[in-house]
Amino acid sequence: MAIGAFKLAQAFLFVLLGIGAIRLLHKDLVGIVEHFIYEMRFNPEGHLVNLVLIRVAMIDPHRIKQISAAIFAIAALDAIEGTGLVLNQAWAEFVTLTLTACFLPWEVILVIRHVTWMRIGLTAINLAVVVYLVFYVRMRMQERRRRRAQRA
Image 1 (tube, rainbow, N blue to C red):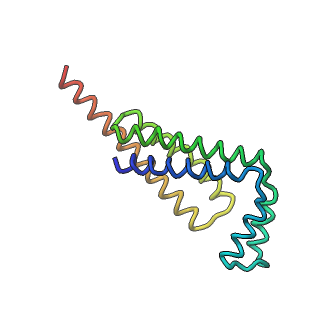
Image 2 (cartoon, rainbow, N blue to C red):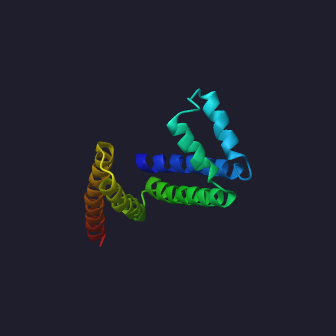
Image 3 (cartoon, rainbow, N blue to C red):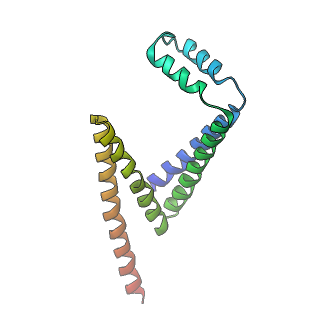
């Protein structure tokens, strides 16, 4: 139930983020980022600031549309997953397990490409969550089968 509520809140935040991305269409992104840099009192001559400005300058309207579409897709998945979990649906447990497990290969590739303790830790945590979900879903399936057998 708590995970479902979290997923629904996350979906809502992703919708807001997607709307924000769409509102950036045909705007001067570099100007917006420069304004943010000055307001936050970052060093405008810093390496990280220059790297961010270079990356932002490469974002065109087509890329913003792609980013917003991806954000809305994630929001839809979170909304579906969260609704199913809140309503205690069996399929939602499988969706949660599948979505969580789908990111493990990417995380392992990132760890292999550039090993850091942070990446290793996050990958280990996500692997532990997947293992827990496998056992949890199996336990729930057995429980449902036992209840069905008792009713029959």
